[in-house]
Image 1 (tube, each protein chain N blue to C red):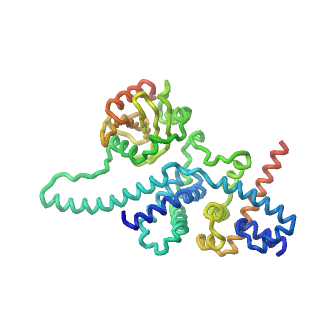
Image 2 (image 1 turned 180 degrees about the horizontal axis):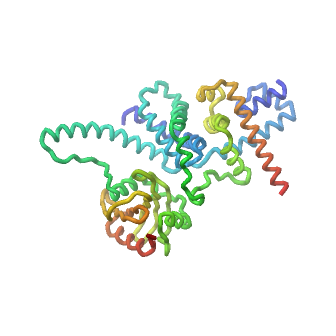
Image 3 (image 1 turned 135 degrees about the vertical axis):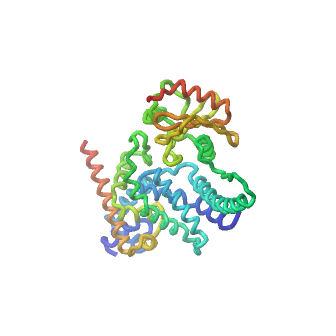
Length: 228
Length: 166
């Protein structure tokens, strides 16, 4: 093997050199140095390509897959229920997932449990920027921010924020460009939510009790000013 | 739990991290990468019973991911301009200037070079396997990998020279 052949092989697949190529590198000082340089670059390359993977990713994938499987059954069940309902003159058909924003906010928290156990982009400066872009001004800190993530919400996206309060962890979801007519509340599976319209969209607040939601909402009203 | 479901779950847990990284470097956006991965796995689940050779699941998933990316995300990526730069986090934290420079260089590398590099370095595929996934000849893949490494090395050396001049 000559130097040219060795270098071509080394650059194409540095980790799978044939025996003949390895022997050449051991015998040729110039190619040995070349080989070391390629290995150095590849180490940096591998480190760079290995970007951090979001926490809870496999769980979110499987959750969606399970939901879709259930939804397929739900379609069959609904179809059967529909026939049944017509036969017996039933007037209402129940569906499990809700389009109500307050209920949707609770479902979102349930779908993203890692938001309550992990720290992510938890910077007060980032929260101020997000709230400002949403048409608000934080007059006093809300509490220690633990988690910030841009999530799919309804027909668009929303900022999912978790912060600490004297009442425990509170989830605030800021949903720009999707509007609701009036405040609303919901309670499901031990979670309590309220939604409130703002000039730029709406926000949802979720805690683990009605009392905590009410107290944290008061805190929000005192500490965030919404520009009209 | 049904055997199909169990095997699919094992596949998700085994490959989601690697596939996420692949999706990230395809889309160059962490949110788009997760959406892309979700779509790819949703499609994979629908086709899962048809996959006869489950030992080739990783290469099969990469093909699905690439198709999903080609289907819509390449176009959508152009729309992702509404974020404040402050709101974006740097996806990689290798120490030192060399790592940051490398990240920029990989980002600017043409997809025809970037993809085989990702498949080799992240996926551990051989040139022959990469050729199969990308639908090219093995020789063409070797040429692309050689040029990609030459380009990266050249850029790194240039950056080092610029740093030493300062």
